[in-house]
Length: 165
Image (tube, rainbow, N blue to C red; front, side, top):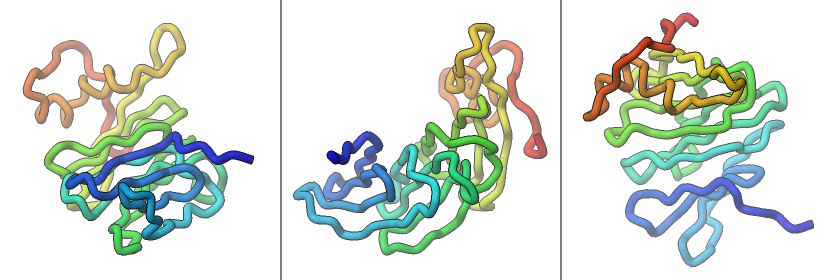
């Protein structure tokens, strides 16, 4: 069996990267494995690097009991926080350029915006499209949190709900 690397994120500075195939792995550009971050029963489905260069985020798949978790790790191996709220596998994670928010998308057709500082949910956005295909990024841009930080801004009806949604 051949393992395929399909989930990758380069840490700022460019000397190390995260490989999210199976469990998350921290490697050097030269290919040396520095650390493995166990994901439990769910495989890592997506990864994103934090701008500080020492933290990264992983989204987990759909196997219970950690279905749909987003985990924030330090490269030293510390699990900083687990964000819970998605009911399906997380298929996308991004971090805002200032590192203040993590935005996650799931197969449940929702986008959630998380505060890194307060380790809490900021908002939830619905993403169902007329074609039945997730268009989460376009809908996310309609969220108040995204619009406030977007230089371009957007107009139109919001697809967002409150943090209790």
